Length: 265
Image 1: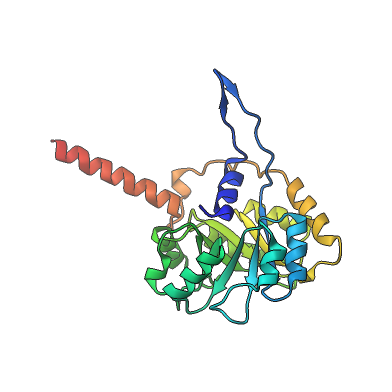
Image 2: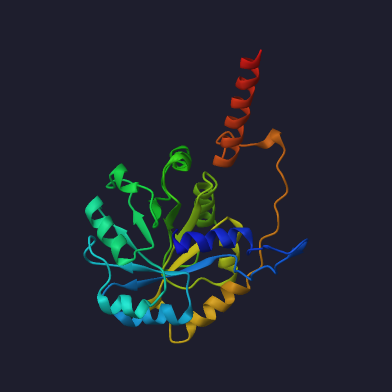
């Protein structure tokens, strides 16, 4: 199983618990509210070494050649840190080759990815989603064989505006998949809190944009974020017409149960 996917599932559970003996519970593991990926060069091991030192959730490799993975020097610098690549026009051959190199996750584009490339395996499958995508189309991603989605920040170099958060939240609410938001510069504590509140599970930032020591402090800030407060349940009278993936699956399940009861008669 993908290490990145496993880590996000652990964050989603708020840590892991396990039984010890009869009635005893293992202490909950301290986990952050969001994971942090570092975007690094495929050729320069300096950025990979920095990402490994800080202990990020993983590294996203930027490559000029979309069909090849990181250099040997970069792989050595990453150590045991999970890494993944973003592929344009992927093929089964290129994906298989990268899997053998130890690729933990793949990022695919919607328009140039053959459906058979999304076969299940040890590596996580991540789909790039454009914020301009219509909500009803984004809602269909829930049924695709992908593990998570990644959104590109509408203002990668500028502060997030309220309208940006609204656009991100609109797409985010259409699916139950884990969601990564990619930016470039480090976000402020208030921006991180806002991203947490709209359901972002992971952020990906360029390692090159951090000054020496800044990435360590940013991770400390991220790790100290508290979990968002539970939202009050909405009454059925104000459910929006464009229902989210979770509600859609509930309605579908209830309809199937009703059909089963009718067949019993």
